Image (tube, rainbow, N blue to C red; front, top):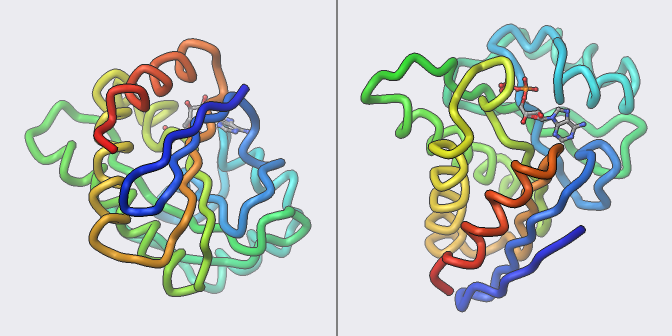
Length: 179
Ligand code: ADP
């Protein structure tokens, strides 16, 4: 299942129901933790599919503060790069939305530095980190839209959702997104 929208800045946004580890894009984003230690959820899936080389690179990097992102190679994945992004642990604080937005935008910044034209995101922070997806999804989409309008280079941003309700929510937001 896939939905597409052309933004008038020349960038395509896609919403896909699926598994991020199988996406044929130049970079996939991981919802990592600050120690880059691997974990459950999408993080565990990426390390399982990509093989031990990714965790070895993460160990060398050592860690990443909340709101930021670091890059490793993609190991055995189709994607050449994995961008390990550390989203906020949801606390209901006034700064949570800005921290989540910065996590997405810093991920896109890392992708640009690696000259990627296509990037796939999972729904950062909405699993174990507890961010309600109804609140997180518009932040995800709007922060990425704002970034690509202001920073030419990336041609396609794909949001990969792991469940039907999450996919439906993102489709609704994509339909409403200003071109
Ligand atoms: P966080 O700790 O940032 O909350 P999680 O991995 O717990 O990260 O969850 C983030 C989102 O990723 C959740 O919506 C979860 O359903 C989803 N997810 C889990 N596995 C995958 C996968 N293989 N591909 C895409 N999304 C996934």
